[in-house]
Amino acid sequence: CATLAGVGSSIFHPEGAKIMNRLGGGKKGKAMGTFAIGGSSGFAFGPLFAGAIAYTVGPHGLAAFTVVGTIISTILFVLMPRIVAHARTIDQAVATENPTVAAKPLKNYWKYFGILFIIILSQSVNFRVINAFIPIFWTRELGTSPEQGSFALTVFFSIGIFMTYIGGLLGDKYGPIKIIRLSLLVWLPAMFLLTEVPNFSPVIMLPVGYLLLLMIGAAKAISYSPVIVLGQTYLAKSIGFASGITLG
Image (cartoon, rainbow, N blue to C red; front, top):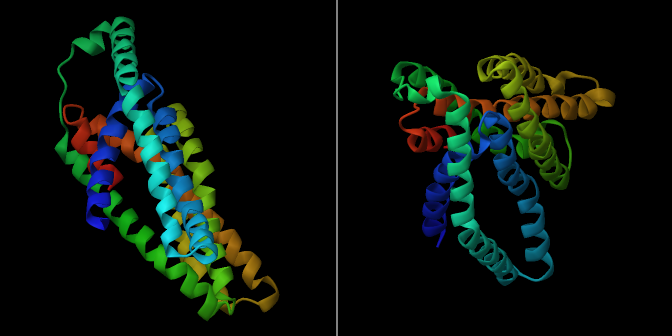
């Protein structure tokens, strides 16, 4: 079941990002930020809901998520023809507004995408490490309860809900490369400082820890949409492939 769920997710997200690229028109960052809000919300609140259901009803209560997933999938299946038709309309409108750009053949810039892939890989590894690191760090190094460790992880994911969308808007306004650079400039120093928090005074240790955690979460999330849009731009002929790599 877990394997099937993973396969379904891996099929859905690249195609979803591809269609959002078309629906976005000239505001691709905003469209991608909107698309990513769902995933960010799931990361933030999914464990809380699942934990509450499993604790009150039991593990079998998690079957409720199957019902929710089935309903949403059915709605999406019914609406998909309209979504695709709307995407075609936007494609035609963009081509009419920019006939010179639309007439140019699409190209893939693999060299630049390869450089972007290195950034994506480092972010992905760092993100997975943080998922495991934060609860342990909060309990062992900061002396909190396991519940507070889980809450810290929720804080980390929650800031991502808002910053993912904001990152898309900023990417449209200033360009994705500038936002990615800003993300790295904030993320790396904040990560280093977080490891030094146990050496701070106990009075300020937790407040500073949460502040740095918010900075790390915001820096990670703000680059999410720009990274996807930039990858799709570099591989304009293979947007589906670019979406799968940048999302994964």
